[in-house]
Image (tube, rainbow, N blue to C red):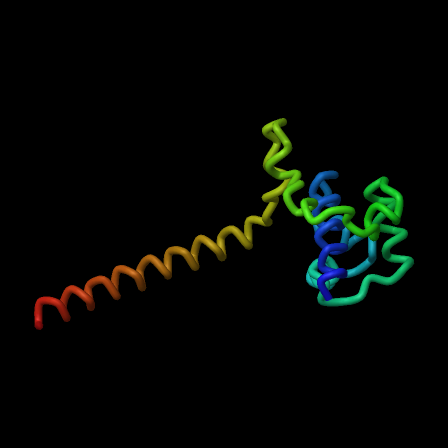
Length: 127
């Protein structure tokens, strides 16, 4: 399974390097984002015709996408950190609905955290 994870990691890095979103890749494969995400995460199989379509969209040979990593250091070649153009937006391009959900969730966790702190304080003062 490790072999396929390295391939998926390579696909993801190339996709990010080219500034291509999972959403765009999903459209290219005529599939949903969650389905594409499962392929990229190695949870579902990527078929040969899909490799072809992705390679064409990313303008790289299929071998580059599927090709085995030549050394174990490839994981450090994370384009997010190597890109000095300052254009980080494309990497974190989340739809507003997701951002709002996350913000709501963070707010809820902060409230629960405060509540727990108060409970701890009351236990301390009672002991």
